[in-house]
Length: 224
Image (cartoon, rainbow, N blue to C red; front, side, top):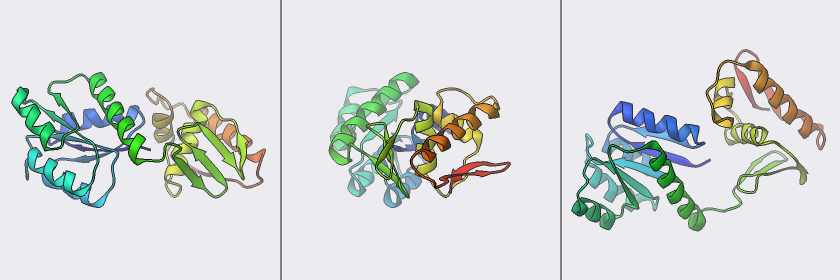
């Protein structure tokens, strides 16, 4: 999964961006100051960083310089500064793109997708693979194999299995799973998730006797 660091001190804006990106299938980490953002950049790897300029701690401009020294991750600057000189200075300093506040979420998502596509094309394995025991999941080719035998999954089944394999030790609630696998809001319908989990189990059973998915009663599901 692509991970995005959001460095924005306004809670409402930070949370709004996180919700939109999460719905689009991205994993988000939130930072609320320039100092905190740089610390995350030092300790974790991201596919993209969204950076506000007016930040407590160190400024966005300072954070940009430090981040680019740490990792070659694309950075989209988000700022109310809309002068041409400001944009040129930031792009020259290493920003990969610039979006002016206020912005439309659709535009932000499009710019995010463009930068991640460019970055992944040169820095990541295009056949990005998740492995858990004998299950191999190839994210870009939408392919799943068990002991090298392919199984056919629907889009939602693939996304559910992908989420569980990303963090095999974590228990995911039905809401977690629904939010990740569907572009919609969870309305507390247990049957939908249960049916899809059951279908995944049946398809895995066609090529392996092992039980890969565990039900944690009253909480959700995890890899076994």
